[in-house]
Length: 134
Ligand code: ZN
Image (cartoon, rainbow, N blue to C red; front, side):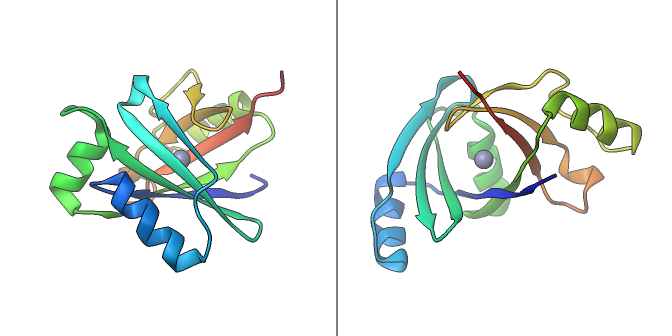
């Protein structure tokens, strides 16, 4: 793994949270994107070299709906930048982690992504992401 790519925060109302985090960081989000397959709206902030992703559910059975029902708003996942996502999936499976996406899928922000189940990583949902070069 190369570095933390972003931290994902689950929110109930992305417009309200965009305003809140803009106040916190002193600048607005730089993009929004809907990931229909995941049932989420996302928005991204840059803080120095770091990125924060806000996630809002777009449907009842979105993973974000379930997360907020169980835990409330808050930090949802930590995403790590990887060079070769397929190789990392193989490596982490061998190490005993539960990989939720055997085949990486297209996530927000031009990335291939795969998640590790939080029960295999001390309660932390881990996202692996690899930049798509096109
Ligand atoms: Zn993410």
